[in-house]
Image (tube, rainbow, N blue to C red; front, side, top):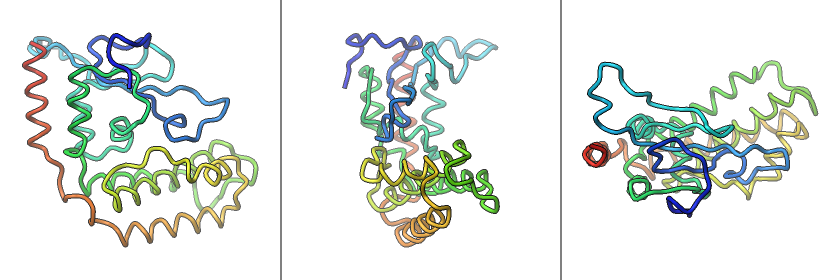
Length: 231
């Protein structure tokens, strides 16, 4: 873990946490993989007193870099947003300040059955965008095969959440099978069968490891303290 001040990372002002997500965090990277960075920043509190409110997210300054203002990040995390929760569990932390450390320590407060449903819902949306009635061609349709891989990855994450109570980020145990899907080497019926097995496993485990609702009060206390700190 890299502490603030010990990194050459270029980050938006007020950044309290910056991590690498995507294929490098998942253990699915190849030589062509980008470095996808996500971060959390804190806006000085007086800026919210103006009629024109500050942005709740920014892109850049590096390629494939995106950051949320801390309040927006917490709202999305409370809803179980997979992309946001994956930031909190990424093993590749490039920058973290004391405020960022407190945010990481708050991770369990964001988790609930909502997260299970959000991961499963994201997987279902990927499946629908794939157009299951018109499956991708073997060895072709690279974009659609990539979507199929991420559909399975999201379902693996939902099952892990339901059974272990936290997101699954590093999927190295499934790397070869997932990359075979991405390359279009796995027959579509096998992809559908894998999806069906994961859905059945999710139904069996759903609601066992996580509370029905996140700890909103703990998150609100954190945000209040952050706003006081940023005065």
